[in-house]
Image 1 (cartoon, rainbow, N blue to C red):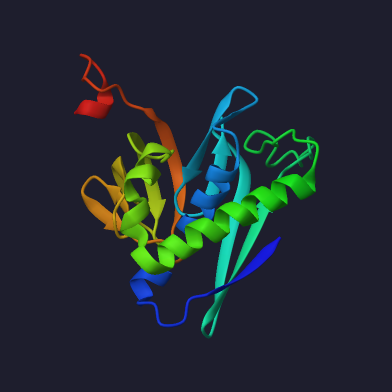
Image 2: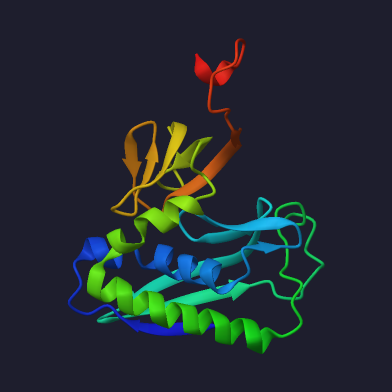
Length: 194
């Protein structure tokens, strides 16, 4: 589905956080856990269940409007072999019900985002941030020869991704590699703590 949202008059930095707000809206519209997995937001524009993608967001600006494309696997259980290990589905019966819940959530979040900005969501977003606490590699562009690698501190208040203290902004960036969460305390022999 697509939603047309007014972004006229917003600073470019705020407008750039729209995909995260749309993704947050999708997460908030769904049950906290589905089919045994927690619903989480993966920077910059995916929603995951048990580390598998259930929804993707694509926002495109047209003048004072942005079209937010939201794709959610509601019932589909069969995926092409190249994505079968990374994709999942909600397993809910009604596409219309999911649509209505997402649009209702998006309406509430969009209004708050317009008036209060991205910072108003930051604490809640950190709670559902899939990459936070993981070792990741992110390419800034498709032809980036040296991805940024390091421990992910999470989504920043500006909507960037903190990787080892360096902020990476979405644009054309994409996460290339993810290692499991590292323990809160270093264990002897754990190479992630060199």
